[in-house]
Length: 435
Image (cartoon, one colour):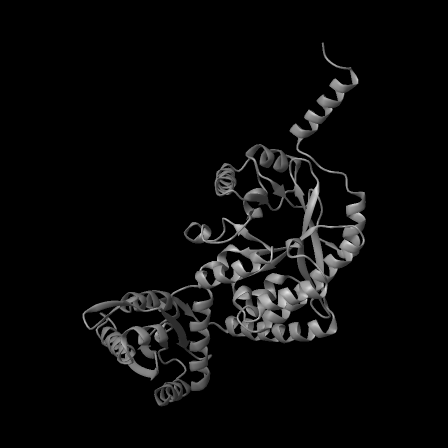
């Protein structure tokens, strides 16, 4: 802190003085390291990193221990154009594998960078900005991140939005919309996907992508999940009472599944509204299954014992799917719309979709294609053997009341091959029994 105050005082006297780059390093798996190797391991790793920084060629950084599993380095004479290059040099100097007692141990470390120029005037704010940069590197699954004023403004906006979510749930600003899911072979509706919608009093319609990812890093996600589960299960109960008996899919993440009390909350809501478990499908986004996979599987098994269906959403967009897929008690793969929208012209997407459908068939589960918008999409998917689909060819997501009106007037949309077969059968029948 004192060194930062001195730097800022010097720059105040001479605004044209050289800039400093503050690089902070944070060890994020410190608990695991201490559990495996003892309390001295963090000190040994930090000391090793400090020596490596001092030995960097062409640089003479000042190195400081901040606290716990963090250290900082000040690089004088850094120009804005040199920041990215210097951050990369630090990453190479501070590798993920560190030596401890003749062992090579993995260190989950992230770097944050702050350029100390005329925009920075407070030592405490500089350290806060460094923390923000490290947090953003973690969020983006990147090794390093350099702070900018725009990042700070974005974080402030996100925190304000999270506060609005809490208030919005109380004020009734959230609603559920429903998009039909159709069997491709005959065009019949077999279920719907429930999608949350937020009508913000100032911002207007807010996309779930703007608030769900941040909510997942806090207990706020459980409040959202409770709202969604209650609204959907109550709606299923109303539909069943009126003669509409469809399975409803609800989007959840691995973070939701691992929240304490999630499964119990779901079971209690099913009992409260007298809805059987098989009427509920949980769609789990593929990319959220990377961590704690064994715990996720254990929780999913509890849910499937209650006859709740589990599916993998956005399949093909994650990066460790095949490693975990066989462990999960799933019944369906949902192929992401980014691969479906331009079928059959996009050959690369065609190969991926075809492979996903074959994989589902080999595993003995069903496949569903999202984002079907054209008859050509539908025809090609049916030829590949895809079981189900959804998209604007059938309907956009609708409010509960509008869905009922759509459902009662819907005429099945079938692949052309199926339509021709039906017409051929009808013609044969009208001509009498063939000789």
